[in-house]
Figure 1: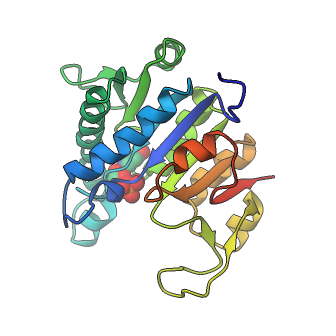
Figure 2: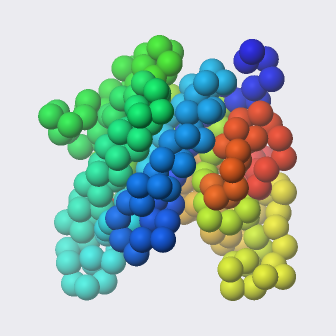
Figure 3: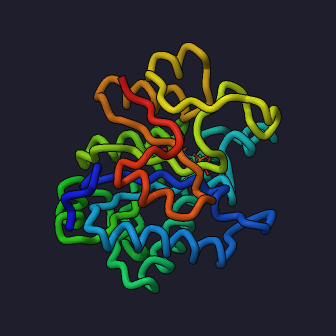
Length: 239
Ligand code: UDP
């Protein structure tokens, strides 16, 4: 049963970078399949799952703008990159026997449903994983903010942020191996200390609405499942 679930409905945020694996650009099929297997396992526990996936493995708005592009145009390219990742994830999940829908914040009727909140919730109730593509649909935002926004819209009990490291550290653990990891943080601490959990817009949105954020390492097998079961994994950000 579902009695042992800490969270019955979650929003999972995956960065585009998570899809790279050993490839310098784009999507590693092996990594994608691995992620899909992990999600499928959690799906079979009866958890209702919404997913926001980034686009950093393909294109980032700031990168384009730093080379002289108009920021808004570059951001729209970034949002389209998230659509590519969303379709790849949909394909990988369906090969694992998971029923899915992609809803895009930028209309693209031939490849995805438009984002309609009530319809997304209905899909979740019918045991379909909903992948939210194209971020918020607005330039100058990030997929972290899209993840916080969609989590609130669908009434998710937690935002699960999958990363490359084991949680939130006082300093970047890839730079300083002695940096300590936090088990728990308050939203305010994240903002004041400028800790790189998610961008400040996403943290503020979560804080104002008391949405817990669980930050954990995606490369550690079973971590999504452990987070959903309420086992101590990574760092929890709440009040
Ligand atoms: N983006 C945007 N608005 C949004 C979400 C994303 O403009 O609501 C653009 C932005 O340019 C960003 C890119 O899409 O750089 C890819 O998203 P992000 O960098 O958040 O992906 P991640 O770092 O998670 O892979």
